[in-house]
Each structure stands twice: as structure tokens, then as C-alpha cells.
Image (cartoon, rainbow, N blue to C red):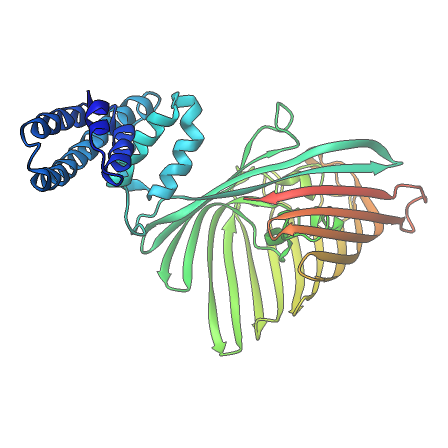
Length: 455
């Protein structure tokens, strides 16, 4: 009947317009009632064409408003039904319409949404969603990274490796309280490498530039840990010195007072002063990371850096704490770092030294090493990088199962990166590995490839 009414209108303007309205609104009961009313009006007022057109406009307006409300009601019911099936349906005001579109798209297949139902839900959420930036507390900011690698060496089995899958969230709960958490699966997860918490802490801000960090964090010793992600690290591998003495990535639980002090417009200091559980009695320093302490003594440390004109950073780090169960033997670590960036040219260097007390008759375990890294970004897409590093680490202590440790190597790493975007990178690296005086020479050079994204 509605289509018959439309066909009787011979106006070249009204006919196609009403036909489109009919096609768009035909499933609405409210619309059908409105067009029925319009049909009877046409029959009674054939000679009053102008008044009929005016009445038509009024009826179309009323129908549109009624339809919008009906569609919103239908969308709300669908939203509560579909999105409330597995969890509480979140308040529409929690996200903006654009954020809702992403969420609905992601969950649509699980919720069984066809195009019509998805549009109805989005119509409801669009009316009720946030129209402006959220105030505190903010919604979590989500991110992460993943990278897959390939390694080939005469000294080991050639293998592909899903090295890291990282998810992180952060946000603000109060003007003086922010949070961050990182969750990782390493080497594909599974029984041998279960998912773990990389970081999970609160920052309580006393001043705009001073906060107390509470929770699980990366220990502020030297600077490489802040650059161990796949985009920030310009090579596939990590410096051997940073892995074994800086024990990258060094996860600890404790408290850290951190902030900065502006000395001059072109010079400021950054500082970290912390108390943590500390490294324990693993087979070597890298194997001594743990979240729960093995003794009552807490480990203490600091890092102090000076930044000049936002181009050069020079800093020093110190750590001390007992590593055995009885708290009788200390581990002390000292480090210095240099970061410099002039345009697309970057220099990164670190030095570390560790000394680990051992029971008689074993001598003190000592580790020492450094690396120097130079890179240049070409045309915003290509980055050649050279890194030279050393590690000399000898510890014969066997207390509490600690195994003798003996590293004496020098590594020259040559790398080339291609950045498809700033968050998508493909890396090539070749390492020339040379043994020190205590080691017998062998062919263990390494080829490494990596594909990485940050999201």
C-alpha cells in the first residue's frame, strides 16, 4: 500500500525522495503507521495539493523523529542482549563513538551481529556515547608490541622464534595517581615460558615532576632496559654486557622515588632512588632475577643522569644488596651510560662492573664490560647500525647452587633496518663473535633477522 501511494505521486522530486525514505524506513512500525495516515490524507485532499505537501513534510519529520527513537530503543535492547551476554554491558558514555566502532567490530563475530544489528547498536551508542575527551579517571590506553626472529649459527640450531608478545595498559586514576602494566609471552609461552608480568606499578605524584613508584618495575640501572623493545633497540640482539651484568630486562618489586630537577633552560637532571627485593642466588646474575625476595635484606640503588640541550645524556648507576638466603654476601654493581642524538645520527654507550662476594675459599666474582653503538637514519626509512661490545665475567662461587660462570667475548654487530612506518620494522644483523684470552677460538658467528611491530 505504501509503495502504491508513492507511485501515485508523479512529482519528479517527491517520488524518488519518498521512495528512498520508504526503502530506508520500511522495517519500522512507526513509519508504516505514518504512511498509512499519509495515504488516507491524500485520498481526502486530492484538490489541496499544496496543503498536502506541507502536511507531508510535517508527517515525514514526525516519522523520522519517531523512527530515530524507535531505532535507539531497539539498539539499546540489542546492546544489552548481545553485549551483556558474556560480561556487564559497559555504560555507553565510557567511550567515544569511534572507540565503540572499534570495540563492536572486534566483538561482532562473537556476539553474532549482522550488519543491521550492528548499525542499530551503533545508532544507540552514538546517541549516548562520550562527546568529548574523558576526564580523570581516564580509560586505559592500550598498546604493545610483537616480534618474530630467525637465528642461524654454527654453534646452535637454526630456529625461528616468536620472541615477544607484549600487551600494556596505562592511565590516570587521579590527578596524583597514574598506573602502568605490561604482560608478556616470551618464546611462544607454554609450560617452559609461561606468561608473566613485566611491569605493574602505581606512580603517586607529589609534585608535577616527582613521584613515588610502587610495584613491579624495570630496575633503573644504566639505560638499556628502556630501549629493549623492538622499535627502540636498533639491532636484533641485545648487548651481551647488558644481558649479563645489567640483566636486561631486570624486573623487580619495590619502591622508586623518581623525577627531574631543572638546573638551567638547557640542562636538567633525572634521578631514581629505589629499594627493591634485589637479585638472588641464581646460577649467574641474569638467572638471579625474581619477584619475591630470598632474604630479609632489601637492595638499594640509584641512577642519576644529566641532559644537555636535549641532545646529550650522561649518567651513572649504583646497586648494592645481599644475594644469598642468609643475607651474608653482597652483590655490588656500578655503571655509566652515554646517549647522544644530533639530527639522525645517534650514539649509545654503556659500561658496567659487578662484584659478588663469595664464601671461602672462593674469590669474589667479577663481571665487567661495555658497548658502543653508532647509527644513522637515512631518508626516514633506513638505519645502518654498528655496535661493538665486550664481556669479561668470571665467578667461581657455588653457594646455594650458583654455578661457575665464565664469559670472555667480544662482539662486532653489523645491522641494517628498514622501517615501513615508524612502528613497523624489518631488521638484518650479522654478529662477528670473538673469544677472549681464556677461551678457545670457535666459529659461532650469528645471523639474525627480525620482523617487529608496535601497536
